[in-house]
Length: 615
Ligand code: M6R
Image 1 (spheres, rainbow, N blue to C red):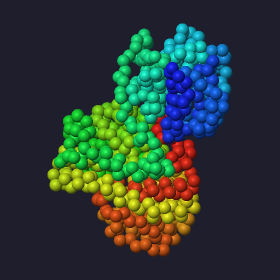
Image 2: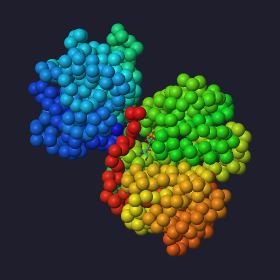
Image 3: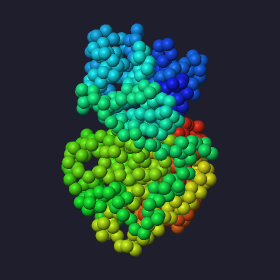
């Protein structure tokens, strides 16, 4: 999704802006641009990558002591240079705006401004903001007030940064619904939509709150909450020291971030479970100081999430129901937020999100609260995210920054966290003996090693990938707790290789999808040695009998024999409850190697963004 970086300092800020944009590239974008104060506002934009923007900036000798820059992921208007940010308003003293998010009432404001004589040169909702600020600037004395007046008229979720040609000594920024952070430096001040873009300059970070408008100069800043405080009194916001490591964001010896992140899973899971490794028993306090009280008051779980995080929730439902005896609903956040569900106040609502900024997940969680759900828990990978700040309880997946758009280590660490939650709740509900608890702790301690073993199937998967790369469609089958893993495998494949892939609960095969099976439709099956293996084998027979080509991920003792049109890769061990976590690995590797074969952009698949901060 779109990214913002702005800087105002005592030296040329162009290198900071370009480096910031590079750090934001992982979010996904289709155009990039910047504005700097250089005897007026100098703008450079391109539909190319940030490296292309850097070349243009050098050719046009763009430099200045203040500037704002942006990577755009198109929502309103095609990806093109004229739709790329920053957008201008005015000819004599121009306003420049960069913007993340969506302005929902942009059409009404656009018509109003056209009637007032403003001319539009793009199809974006952002240009509406630029003209609106310019219009309001005619009614008040300075840009700060004009931004405050303007945001009162905007509906939707947004983060903006604004500059005015006549006053190059300041940048005004505002947030409402989309993240925006200030970086407080020694020789300048900065703004960005993501901490990773700021670390090059400072670790002192301020998280702006909803309705905050801030003015930055090279020497200082002030913040006002314009939605709550129309008198314009300054508000205090704490300065946090960010502990995000710079190396964690680098690629190291790997060709792609996705590859790096797949291979980081043993350590990511070990970091996530570290506090359990050193403990003799599992304590609810892992989820927050109020967890014991809240966990003993609940009798139902509701999980809200999107995409891969939703798949983690589906796996957790099996665990929570089977091990903890707790009824559990898992809902796609974008669906839940527009339903009228029956509520039970003794429900624990769990938001799962890698980024903690997914607009639908945040909105669904708020909606659940409005409906009367009183207890909430975040399972999230970003300590500084909106989700973490919105829930009563929280558990951090300590996967480290996930840069590849396709989620990998976030998923397995989410699963590890959800299993920990299951064990905690099962113990509190007297569904788990202390021997069982000890066995679970031992299995969790072993999990990083088991993941390491699972990664060793890579050479075999690479051979399969060559065959897959020629195909246009694929089916993924699983049963029980491995059905969501089949869904995750299909999502990974379609997301980065652009091969159409569908997942089915294997028992559903003969209710429709079997009609698709022929030699051109590879069928991937997740076949661990669990209680549903016998049933799954019958389903595989149905495929085999119709000339389908089967690719089976089994366990060492699954007793499935390789044969004509039946290929088998075995994981070294069957991990019982932890099996879905291990069976995720070969599916991620398959998607990765198929994408490599097909030459797609593995880390930044077309049309997708890392953090989906708009609805
Ligand atoms: O940051 P989140 O976990 O909330 O993101 C949710 C989805 O957008 C995300 O999992 C998406 O499906 C991934 N790109 C899949 O690999």
